[in-house]
Image 1 (cartoon, each protein chain N blue to C red):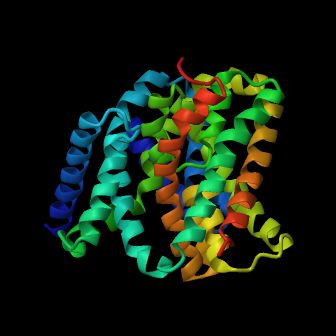
Image 2 (image 1 turned 30 degrees about the vertical axis):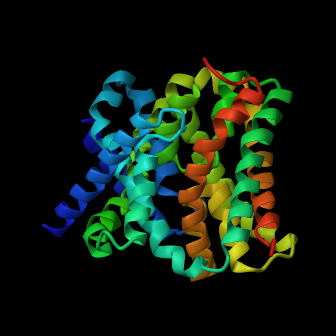
Amino acid sequence: MALIATLLIYLAAWQVQRRWPHPLTNPVGLAVAVLVALVAATGYPLDRYRYETLPLIWLLKPAVVALGWVAWRERGRLAGRLRPFLAGLAAGTLTSLILTPLLARWLGAPPELQKALAIKSVTSAVAVDLAPRLGANAELAVPLIILAGILGAVLGPWIMDRARVHDPFARGTALGTASHGIGTARAADEGPLALAASGAAMAAAGLVTALLAPPVFALLGLSGG
Amino acid sequence: MNALLGFAWLLTFYALGEGLARLLPAVPLSGSLWGMLLLYAALSAGLLDERKVSAAARPLLRGLGLYFVPVGVGVLAFADLLRAHAPAVAAALLLGTLLTLLAALGAARWR
């Protein structure tokens, strides 16, 4: 029941996105919202829902591997721009890992939330894998990740215009680094170079976050538990 | 058949990645992230025909969003925690995302 309901609601959300293409009608965000409301309203046991939808989660592992193919496919367009690409990627990832949990801490959020927020810019596919290794909770992180994606996709182009940056390569790198797949879908509107930079940044941000999060969490006193 | 063969390749790289993750426990990469790196390396080195992988990678990635929808639904277990800290979470998300974006944007203009 849970598996087929999830699939059908996701497909319906896709139709909504096709009809009204906008980051706010993101199919993942819509499907999660509808399913959360349904599970809460019907009292369907959450553990049973989790168990019945496990086959979907198993597909995440080969899908993350397949991101290597995305990065490989886009490498030609990024040739000669490796330095700014890596600089943007590192600066964005470090900002997300350090500033987001600190902001949350100053505002009184507990460590559990600080950790989930720190990985908000990584693609959910990687976060599901990464969270347990970091002592973070994937179920708490994924909705925050989706929201970070939507925020970046909705406000990103506007704020980048205000910053007077029109270089599609820099804009794509920023969208992919800060807003993963949802940002990449938005970058597609800005042309093939922005799309390539964003797709590659999304794949690479997963790697960089996995490598940098353990030392950053140790520095911020967020390791363990 | 081609898609199945490609899927077998993706799983092979995932398995290789898991093996490497076990061999190198000091590197904080999961099996699937190692698999992603190994696949990139194999394609770059010309060890693997791109068409073999793309037949599976393309349809698999088209459904990527669907695979983590169930994880998102699990947020129900944290409804109270999120409600208690909603303003902090909203502010950290909004500012954190925009600062991440601007930091990446600024640095990506470095020549």
